[in-house]
Length: 101
Image 1 (cartoon, rainbow, N blue to C red):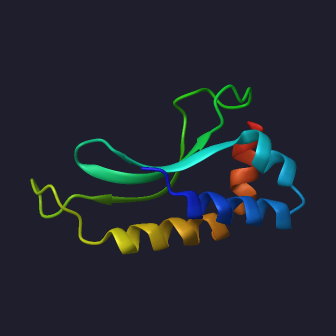
Image 2: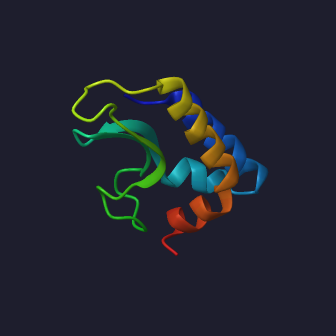
């Protein structure tokens, strides 16, 4: 599931740092992913972006299913809030990651 509001937040943060062009060229999306035991919020590079291999992702937040063996999470709201905090705290690191550094 795409999290467009977080994508807009990231683009705003990058623009504030003078990197609006990077946001437009490199950001593919921010999505929930699930490996069967953990749900992640991942930043994905734009398809064809040369500085990051497709399938690579920047982890913004994660939460394990709980209790063990359950198929529910404690709180999606917490997970999204954690991803939002991660964007703000890691904006410079995200820029380097998108640049392939």
